[in-house]
Image (cartoon, rainbow, N blue to C red; front, side):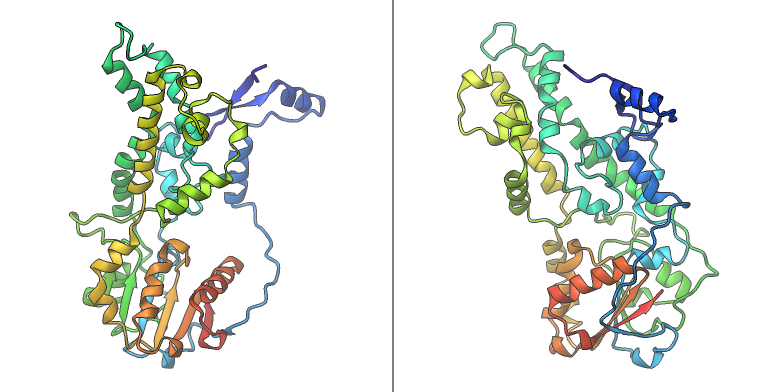
Length: 398
């Protein structure tokens, strides 16, 4: 028997709260929830009244005060700047801030939050773009085929326009993300502002050093007077209206698909569902597909879905290739300061390129800013990935 849902979540607008849950809440005299479980978890994490007490974590690196290592910073240093730099200068530049600029009933937000298979899509938004729920998209096809009463291709009442409309409606969430996300993202980035009175890194930055800025904003220039000639806006500069702002996941497409396919539990899907037949069936028997039309439409939807993952990729290898001469120019760097960078795996290739093009990579002194335990864990993960010795690493709290 199909479950009946009694309430609509105030955040994601999805139906939730079964009759059994209602009876439980009544029995225990509890107030009915206004959010579904998924959105309650997200709201709890974001609430200003909710603070997760961090357990002490052992830091295996030398800790220095950010105001006391000016002598370590030479003109030939390289700074790697991430979003934490903007955040510490009062810029509301987290992806949660971006989400809050999109109306709850906006179809872009609905598409993102309905079809990305992560509990919290905004914490690591670029990574989330690689987790569109293939099965959820595919299984919308039958709904649209039925709504449009699409006939079999050999039926004299078959209309090609209805057939293609069903495919288009099924994949419309993907079209929305591909087309609307870049435009809305750029509008948001162009409105970001900083607190001009807050300059916590005045003793950390070297005006003559080189900078790779992963942010789209120019606050290095406007707050600290760093020359634009010293800055590589590796993912685009918002002031250049013709330049694309690069946003996306960093996965290899074949590995991404194979990992999903091998870990997805196909048995949870109905035997003759579009998703199970399209992605997991070893036979193309029309008896299971019911009609040639359904089979052909499924192949079109799957093809379009896989095209999405290509479109949503950051294509870091292409970016590195386009900046080949720049990375070569960094070959003599001996001191690298990483400030406010999340060290997300999507950006590992850039950091790896800096290392492999360096004349003496084992001699590089690394300085990482950190804010909390999660940052220390990310630093640990990165230096293990990069093969950096702990004695070449210093960290400073911001």
